[in-house]
Length: 193
Ligand SMILES: C[S@@+](CC[C@H](N)C(=O)[O-])C[C@H]1O[C@@H](n2cnc3c(N)ncnc32)[C@H](O)[C@@H]1O
Image (cartoon, rainbow, N blue to C red; front, side, top):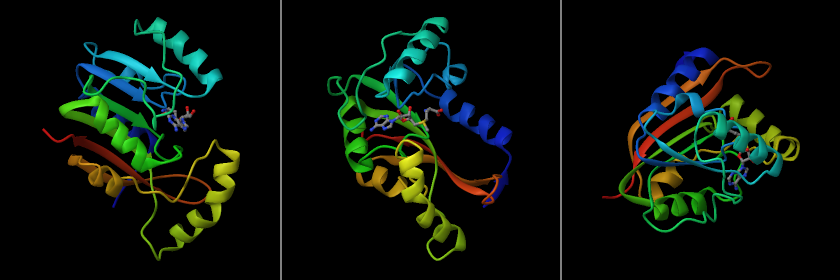
């Protein structure tokens, strides 16, 4: 697996996110870290369950001339109609949600047929590796200290089970301290047409 720096990963994230067009929902949008990566023609809407982050997100959305009314919801229950979006993006969110399969199903529901998804996340190392053992041991602490973050998840099979087809799926290792390189998944997929 290719070893990247954080700057290399940022560039790749921008490339994946920049491919999205039309009505785009960003789930777990945090404080708006991805605005600079969006194509200028995108009609963006954010979803963020954390009140403090949502306030900052609204401020930054206004600065970027996007809709400054992020949805107060979780991605397991998106308060939007069926087939109302062209794309959904989430970075470092599927590690934190309560139920990845429910999120994948809900994202599929709100997308038009053939709609796009982009997800970027740190993921589980292969089973049987020392890295995976560390991830398994660290996850109960990470979920407690870091807003439900799981170090040992791999959302790709659950996205595929929900009906998405990966069109550009890349697995990298990104330099990190103190535990050494972290496996990262960049997933661009398409909903059934
Ligand atoms: C690690 S932060 C990532 C924020 C931002 N996407 C980024 O790349 O910097 C994870 C975000 O997911 C949000 N989150 C947690 N559980 C969620 C859920 N069930 N549905 C949607 N967002 C969730 C958190 O509030 C937080 O803003």
